[in-house]
Image 1 (cartoon, rainbow, N blue to C red):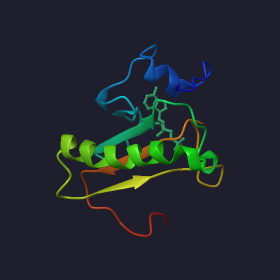
Image 2: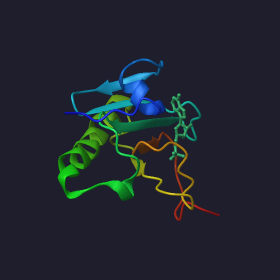
Image 3: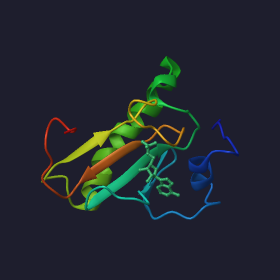
Image 4: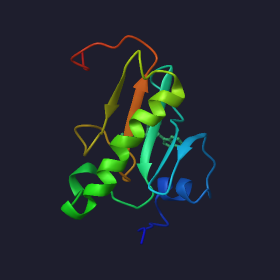
Length: 119
Ligand code: AMP
């Protein structure tokens, strides 16, 4: 059974109580356009079940974690950036500037990126 937090913005997107530009969904995850994109392609991939952050993932969530990673390849294909390349980022906690506490992967691409990712 999926956990739901009625105060969580992303849980409400899962339930379609808040609109989002959904690019892919299945029974495990929803992927939608980030409202403030940082690159030409920027999609968030979230599990349908509420988990607050990467650091709260438990061993029993292994399948959920796998579904997020599997969805990344599918979403990259939908966005047309599978061949050109893309980056998957999980912000966890304050140093990483996590702002929404429902675990999400940022799938970013559509331009040449640098490494390391900070100035
Ligand atoms: P983070 O800082 O890693 O927690 O990322 C949260 C992301 O959610 C940010 O990139 C926001 O732009 C994005 N975001 C916040 N609200 C919405 C929304 N209603 N629809 C789509 N993306 C959102």
